[in-house]
Length: 378
Image 1 (cartoon, helix red, strand yellow):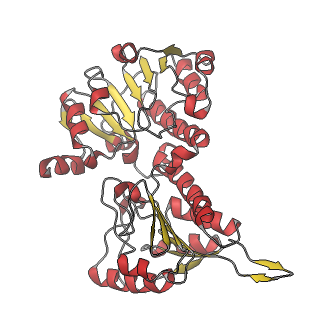
Image 2 (image 1 turned 90 degrees about the vertical axis):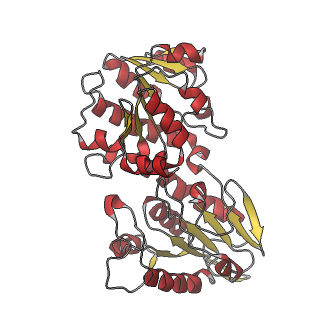
């Protein structure tokens, strides 16, 4: 079986889908691995490192695609790249399927079996394949460091001969993987941390990290969704949530928002009136900028100032830490590949929960319900 590892073409995407260690795993199973020349440049992996692991390095991209049975990427392939794919091959990458309908149609029309790492089920069995979590962990960590550099105050409590400096107040909205890492990192920097989440079940995790859990009192199971994600809440809950967040955000120096569900527009947690009520010099790090942002003023890919409040909508934070991000992503991918190819050959077991869950096109059909619905509504 022939495996192709591509050099990422998206500007700013420094990660790579395979490391020499994961290439060696594939070659040990009898797979023939080809790596595009320069694929590892962003993570300081030389072509010779891949060759030493058993891969063949190829400079001509069309030649790389020519006999590829399995194509591994980080960012979604463009339509132009997909034109070069073999009909009927297998493709794996991050892919927000409901937002990239043109690419989905191209994959469908070429009879490609396409898997999105966004769609890996969040189950115990699939935990080691959960690339969304491994990369979100990095986002939460990096968001705090970037937020701290924007701030014009110290993060920790300092007692000096010139007086006592109080700790910065940090508010984290969303206590998923990114949010919990942000809490832990902000606490390590000495900040006073509060966190909010629509799921009461995360309260214990938040408090175990030393943060205060900001809670909307409710008797309903609002916000508790399937698969480890939050879900839409009732209008009454949203009203009470907004009032509570507004009170806490006005006192915060740094706010980190993490409410992001793949394939869906991010909910606006910080509308204009909340931003206008924040103190000058405060910072918002919006980790949902990719899907529109949790702040009304967020401009994806931009850092702006609104009435003295800095709003950072930097995209793709994991790519700013590409070495460890690639190590983690490559490990997630190889674990999935081993599951997909138990004997070194592709075995599309559509009864398998993980394979069926991550698959979105197969045999000329769109197999993912939400993606098909998005196509029909487009």
